[in-house]
Amino acid sequence: MDERAIPPAALRDADAWEPLRVWIAEQKLHCSLKVGVYEESGPIPEDTAWGIILADVAKHLADALAKEGLRNRDTALREIFRSFASELEEPTAATTGNFID
Image (cartoon, rainbow, N blue to C red; front, side, top):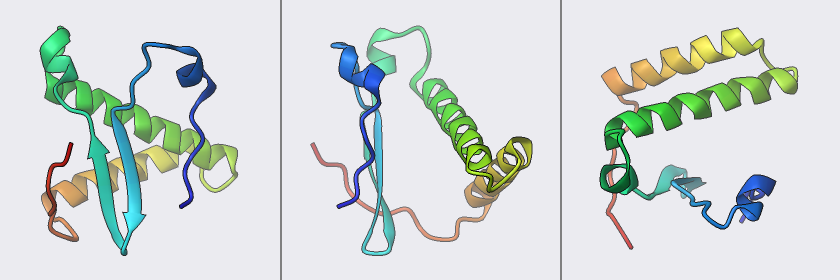
């Protein structure tokens, strides 16, 4: 398995937690999510918090693509947004699966 490194800040912070992991396995997307944290403890509704997380992930992706010289950051961010909106409106595949603990 090809896992990503844990960021140094997460290793230093005893209160760090992992909200999301994503894999491509058996030619499909698989996710492990920790939901309910914001609903229980924060002033932000859970769906709003996840919108912020997904937007921040998109910005990190655009930055990474730009750093690797693959895309201009702004162009990449626009395409990520376009693709995201398109996938929500007209999915390329059904979302399936179960929730596990």
